[in-house]
Image 1: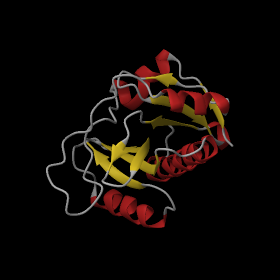
Image 2: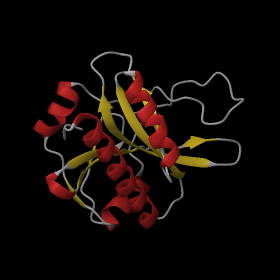
Image 3: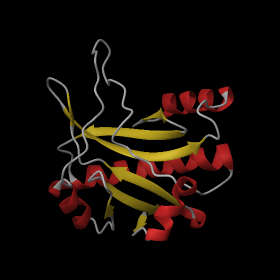
Length: 178
C-alpha cells in the first residue's frame, strides 16, 4: 500500500500549470451501441461510502468542487501522483461502476502528438485495470471498478491507477507535475 498525503491548497493551484482538472465531464459511452451520452452529472455531495472506505484505510483526502475525493499518492523516488475517486456512480442496465481518475500527460495543444497518442493506446492494452482517455489537453487514466467494491479493492485500484499514471508521466515527460 502506498503512502498518501493531504493536498495543500498551494499544490492544488499548481496542478496542471494553474488549471483545474474536472473529471466530471468528457466521458465517452462505456459500452458500444449506446448513443446520446450526456455529460456525467456532478455529485451534489461527496459519497459517504467512499469517505468511510478511505478513512478505514488511513487515506488522507480532500473533496473537490465536484464532490470527488482528491488524493495525493506518494510513490518511490519522492514522486507523487494525483488521483480522484469519483462520487458519481455510472450505471448500465445491470452494473454500477465507480471511476478512479489520474492524469499522466498534458499537451501544449488540444491535439496530442501522434507518438504520445499511440504510446497511451499501447499502455491501455497492457493494463489489467483502466484505460487512457483524452480530456481536453490532458491524458487521464480511468480505472473502473464495481461501485460496491470493498475498501481493500478501492485501495488497490487507487494504487494501481497512481502507479500507472505516474509511470506514463515519467516516461513521456520526465517530470512530476501531475
